[in-house]
Amino acid sequence: MQSLTLNKNVLKWIDEVVSLTKPEEVMWIDGSEEQLDKLREQACNSGEIIALNKERYPGCYYHRSKKDDVARMEDKTFICSSRKEDAGPTNNWKNPEDAYKLGKEIFENSMNGRTMYIIPYSMGPVGSPFSKIGFEVTDSIYVVLSMNIMTRVGQKVIDALGDSNDFVRGLHGKCTLDINQRYIFHFPEDNTIWSCNSAYGGNVLLGKKCFALRIASYQGSKEGWMAEHMLILGIENPQGEVKYVAAAFPSACGKTNLAMLIPPEIYKKKGYKVWTVGDDIAWLRIKEDGRLWAINPEAGFFGVAPGTSEKSNYNALMSTRKNAIFTNVAYNLDDDTIWWEKFDKNPPENALDWQGNPWNGKTSMERGAHPNSRFTAPAINCPCISKEWESPDGVPISAIIFGGRRAKTAPLVYQSRNWKHGVFVGSTLASETTAAASGKIGVVRRDPMAMLPFCGYNMGDYFSHWLEMGEKMSNPPKIFHVNWFRTNDNSEFMWPGYGENFRVLEWIINRCENKVDADIAEIGFIPREEDINTEGLDIKDEVLQELLSIDIDSWLDDVKSIEEFYKKIGETLPKELREELTVLKCNLNNAMEESIA
Ligand code: GTP
Ligand code: SPV
Ligand code: MN
Image (tube, rainbow, N blue to C red; front, side, top):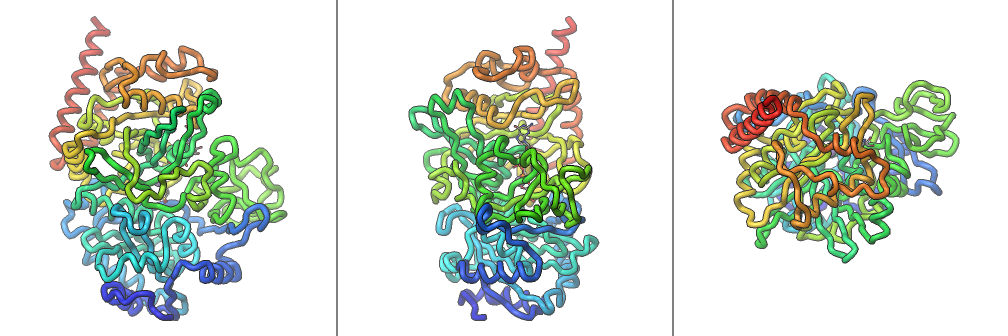
């Protein structure tokens, strides 16, 4: 097939990849529906995907990945910088020479008898000053179809690139799907990503975590912008003014849900609305007005399926009603539809589970869908998609919110004293691990800015970059911390969460506009109880009180864990953050002494 470009840099690289992997055929993805339809048909014939019920799920497909290939694998993910220090203490590192050598051994002839697809894609609206271009070469139609949902694909991207050499070179091959030969290598200095022996989204949709976070965070540090694991949403008040916030929560900690939340009835009646700009990744730049502006570099959602229901996240569910792909959920053989845990109260009886085994949802004790089963859905399907979501200039950010899963310690919400303190709060973010990555679930680990698995360079330098960005802004966003996941003695969530989180967003926006006071506590500004609106909410005063309380003992324990974490960061930890830690410790010790006195 004829190449879509005359760009010599692209063609040279494609030649190299072809002579390494030796595909039987090469196909350039032009983004046309005609071409995509042929690929869909081909993948249905080979069994790679299954077409779903055409009336109820038009344009939708079902896919399963291998049992040992259902989540990101952090121990298989490497930053291959020439100096080990540049990957830093939190990343796996491999010398680029060794990584290329090993990669070449694995990729050699790996596409024999297969077709190589070349996907030109843009992260960000084509032509926006925020946007960047990548190519993904892959031997998987599932990847082509998913990239077509998650990014902007095709000829328009090639036209925008022209003869520039500024593009990310992504090579993905299924190879034999051997877990022992699975690697996700990032070469930030070469704008290159190599991923082999996996077919799971986070490892193989190279525009997402690999490019838009790991490579882009490195690019941002060099070029003066930021790539963050953040949702972006707009909050419209009854006067029609929209304020935007960005929020960083670790994987499977509620970004998609918050990004699409439906405000409680009392707010809807008054005319409040929420608009989604993005649900996972934000690229942020400082503009002449001294504010931080953000775009969502993606074009779709790769959302966690289990738990998504008409009740919990109506907007996400509606986003999946057409042109979506479902991976590792249960498949209803009777009507070609899909199901997952908490989808509704009516599981199918005649189904296949996420491993393809016969499954009766009414009687089986096993799960139908994998806990990290996911949907890929076009953002444009979302009923509350913001009219600014493709704005080439992005949206101005009033507040940055950090949050994690903390059964204890972290209150429902607090505000940092200033940017520097806010960076400290982000740098010490912690959360219980989830099914989004393979490994133990429910263990508290420090996950700075929700970027632990996604920062493409030295974490200490990344913190410095955050501090520098703050220096450059005359009007920086205010920084907050939230926790929807505090539990009581019966291990039940104390805060209702989901749509009710709007009540906390309201306080945050009010703080940004100086419309509400707060109490200054050891850890930052805490809301006064009466300032969290509980109208129409069934929550006891004592519960709200406890949600907003600070337990000095457990915070002092947290300080110890922060000290350990900072020790791991080592020399590159900015002194400003160490100072903030000292302030926190002093505040807590003073409070302790006062309570004893
Ligand atoms: P990634 O796509 O992995 O980055 O995840 P995410 O941060 O977008 O998380 P998502 O919104 O998909 O939510 C993950 C899980 O958290 C789901 O099971 C949700 O039902 C649950 N969840 C989300 N918001 C809340 C909340 O406010 N309270 C409680 N209790 N659970 C929530
Ligand atoms: C996450 O794990 O944070 C995700 C899914 O958003 S993945 O694309 O696998 O990274
Ligand atoms: Mn994510």
